[in-house]
Image 1 (tube, rainbow, N blue to C red):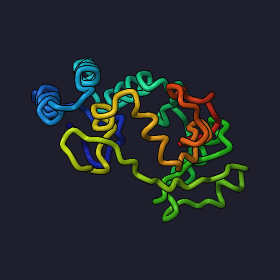
Image 2 (image 1 turned 45 degrees about the vertical axis):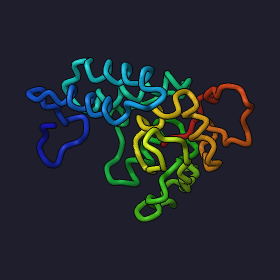
Image 3 (image 1 turned 135 degrees about the vertical axis):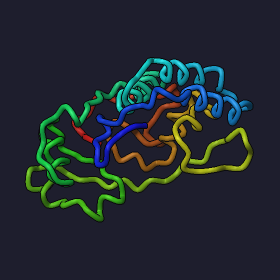
Image 4 (image 1 turned 135 degrees about the horizontal axis):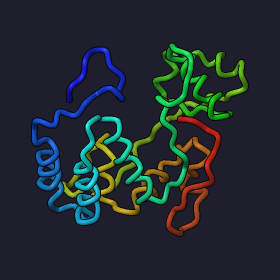
Length: 197
């Protein structure tokens, strides 16, 4: 990666002088040689890495869209960089919610340390803090190593990955029902909501 400090993620360039795509893909192929869903997901990752992106943000967006589509998620995705908002941590978040007409903001637990919840409430936006409970799922290397990327979950669990994520029962987002609220059919994303994360 090439960037000046400080830089926003949209400014971070991919260093095209190195063979980083090949190295990353080879590392995944070796690490997940025994993963049951490698033949489905490694080609998707390889295609995204080979799309010729010059900046990090479009590569990330490409991967997010690819994974969301594969899992049947159709919730609209908006780029915060395209929305004019106030500066500052809380002001920017409130501005994004207002621009998207959100009435709920789902925040990570760490947001309690810096967010001004009263600023959200003053404009009629409810703040919900997510209490993340890490799901446990089978991994190809035996045992269980938590806090890996979605790539690990996909390569090990395939299309059941969304069910695994929903099984924790902590889905505070109304578009992502908890396990107790779903049928046994293949999960389908709920209707687009007005919540922002």
